[in-house]
Every structure is written in structure tokens, then in C-alpha cells.
Amino acid sequence: MTSADGRFRIGLLGHGTVGAAFAELLPRRAERIAAITGLRPGVVGVVTRSRGDFDALLEQSDLIVELIGGIEPARAWVTRAIRAGRHVVTANKQLLSQHGEELWALAREEGVQLRFEAAVAGVVPVIRVLTESLAAAHIERIHGIVNGTTNFILSEMARTHASYEQALTEAQRLGYAEADPTDDVSGRDAAAKMAILARLAFDTPVHLDQVVCEGIERIGPDDLEHARDLGLGLKLIGTAERVDGGLSVRVHPAFLYSRHPLASIDGPFNAVTVESESITEITMSGPGAGGPQTASAVLGDVISAMIPPASTPETSERLPIVSDVVSAFYLHLDVVDEPGVLSQVTGVLGTHGISVKSVVQKGLGHNARLVMVVHPVLESRFFAALEQFADLPAMRTAPRAIRVIEEDFTQ
Image 1 (cartoon, rainbow, N blue to C red):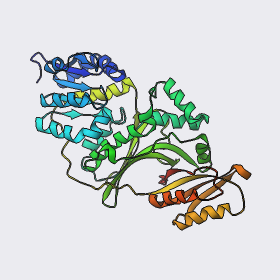
Image 2: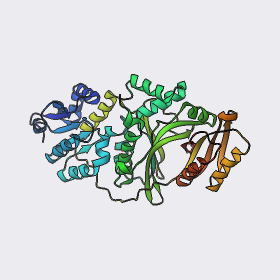
Image 3: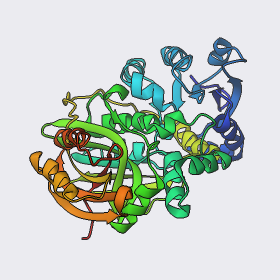
């Protein structure tokens, strides 16, 4: 439904950082949007968790913009809006990563649009590229830096040699991290985004709970120092890829060689690399967070919804989710420097069929460290070796391991 006087009425759910930025941006761009669509958009009301009447807002709106976040009441309100025949634009990755299939199915049933570009990677138009520009491509893999908070923290640690705690405090001071940064630093925020990207890229249902997830809380400055010695840089990487007829979706810290297209993405920026035989590889990057930036992506979805039709089609594949994949690893071992220690370490690795690519020894005596990169191996074999290291008397602390992405993209 649209009003007879040429107005396009938008109901806004949420008035936090992004909601307020959207409410400010829309009137500045309304004239231009009217020239494109023939309809002049405007916000007719705002409802938050603590104020406003959703029923009244729904009645007077042509489209609902959901920026309230979380699962409830967002899920209930989005469902009711779709059932009422209203288009919906949302930036809610947690909602879509856990209940996307039911909401997309309902939107198809009701003949309305559910758009969500701002839910993943800020202003980077990866959703539109996957669903439109690359809709016919057989995608093999997606790599992504899809959380600006963790990318800033790791960049700051590498740049200033700060500890994780110091870099997090700086991220909070600058507004890149929330007062409670748990979702970001644990990798859960990135995991939700990768679930959405995997669903779109591989045409198969993916739930947040199926994404293997590891955060950055245990990363130390010495990990970054040793990585520099080995020619590596550290990022929190989300990956979705075809593996042995199935699909692996995971988020974890990973070291990259300098020529990898994601290696140069620093600060609060996001980037997504898409690989397919038909396109080889493309990388999209840009600001991954911030009120005005996310509001711009939301407004782009609003304009698209004003020019129907569009929908998220039903999935046609049912790929099994694969959790045990092949990876190279960085391995950090604090050991007592005594005769035979290195041979004990390599003996454990050899027992599990793991070969060493490079090794550096730091320190002497009781403060010795062995830092190495091992060649790609099935992850279950590598983690079995880590468990066996705990039985070595020369081990001073638990071993630390971080995945290494081998591609250096030299061609």
C-alpha cells in the first residue's frame, strides 16, 4: 500500500546510533529519491523498546525499517509487518542468521520484500552482488573481514604493540566497540554475518549454530611479533567454502601472507572476497560500521523496496555442513630449553603426519619459545597433536595455535 498523494510512509523501529542516523539522512535525500521512484519517502513515526505503539505505526506505514536489534521483539514485529503486507528493511544479522528462512518464506508468501544489505559488512554491497551481479556464478569460497571492531583491535595491536586489553579500551573510546563487546570479540557477530552470506552464496540453509566460531580474546602482542618474523599479519576471518560435497562455514583468527587481498584491510573496515571459476576472484571493501555508513546502506534498501519486485528465493540445495577441514597453522610453544625438546616436538607432529614449514626459536633457558608454521593438515589431526603436547614435561604453558591462510596471491 502507498498513499494517494505520492508519499511513501516509513515506520522506524529503533532510534539508537543507526536509527537516529537514518532519520537524519532520509529527509536530506528525499527529493533525489522522489526523482528516481516517483514517491517521496518520509518517517511517519518511531517505536523503540520502551516507547511508541507498534500497531499504530504499522497501520500508517508502507514500509517498516527495523533497527532495534536482537531477536525479540524484532522477530514478532517483522513477522507482523510482513503479514500485514508491508515491505521490511532490516540490519539485524542475529535475527536473519537464526530465523531468516522463516521470514524469507513468509515474505515470498505475502509478496513483499525483506531487504537486509546493512546486516552484513556495512556499506559494502556484498548482499546485492551475491543475489544480483553474481546470481549465476557457481561460488567456491567466500573469505571475509566482516567485523570492524575486531579488525580495529588487531590492527591497533600490530601498529602500536598494545595488549588486547589496551586495544579494546581504545576501540571503546573511539566508539568502534560497545561497552559490552562480547558479541564482537567472541566472533559471534561475524558468525551471524557469515551464516547469511553462506546461505546466499551457496543456496543452502545455514543457521548461526552451524558456524564454527573462535574469537580474538586470547591473542597476545607476542603472537603478532612472531608473525611479523614469519611475514604474516593477523585478521579475524570468516570463511564459507565448498568442501567434499558439503559446506564449511567458520570464523576464527587467521594469519595471512602480505599478498592476500584481505591482508591490507586495516582499522574498522570490512572486506569480502568471493571466489568462483567463472569470475576468478573479486574483493569488495569499505567502512564496516558507524551510524551514517550503516544508515546509507539501509536507505539503499528502502529505495530498492520502493521499486519492486524483489525477493530472497527459496533455497534449492541441502549441503551437509563440514566441520573438519584442512588448514595450515601457526604454533607457539613455551618450553624449557633443554636437549631433545625440539626433537620431542617434531616427534609429536610427525606422529600425526604434520610437517613443519618454518620455525623460529626465541629466548633461552626457562623462557624459550618455539614458534613455527606447519603445512596444511586436517584440523582434527593438528588438535590431537596439541593435546599430546600437554604431556611433554618441557612444556611450560598450554600451546597456542592460530590458523594460517596459505594463499599469497602472487599472480
